[in-house]
Length: 75
Image (tube, rainbow, N blue to C red; front, side, top):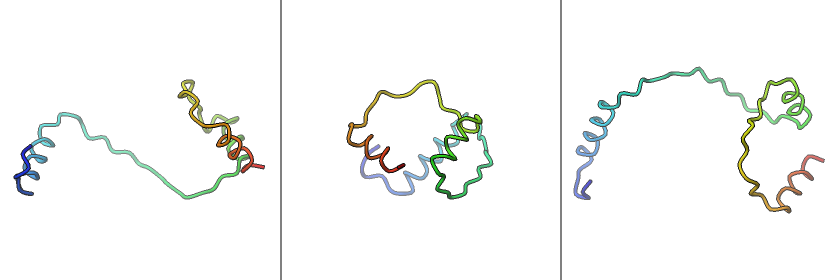
């Protein structure tokens, strides 16, 4: 895309890209409510399978000090 395009040119290009997109639109009902769950509540939800922990986990990236501070924050 050249730098001398106007806003209308950019809008037209975006519209053309959206029209050529064959991916079907999927709508989800999402319910969000703010909360600060306790550690006990989270553990209970995991045990009841309300929260599913995936089998795959990324490699360990935290420093020991960071992990220690997280654990201390629960105490």
